[in-house]
Length: 141
Image (tube, rainbow, N blue to C red; front, side, top):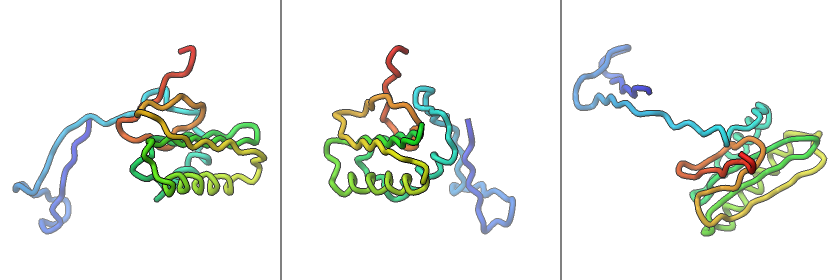
């Protein structure tokens, strides 16, 4: 749980305003389930987050990346109503990630539409997952 507190800059440093402008609310934070947590390659995750800045349109549901044995895997999932521009933005993001890792000798690029908000399981790090989208559990779990 956390509290969101708005500070009124006109009241001076460290002073909270008690009028209607002041807002306090408590809610539970959303935390991704264990099935979407990957192996935590910090360099790959940072590269993917940078590449995805400005590349995630309203129809993109999730992006998973993995780097193993010289191969970069990029899986992007979007709704069936996604535009060609949204597909192209994810393709460019994958290319930007690839440019950060000169040791990569192969790329597995997968950008596919899905019928609903349930996304297929992929090994790797989920670097983007839209609120409301879920990832299927790994086979055998």
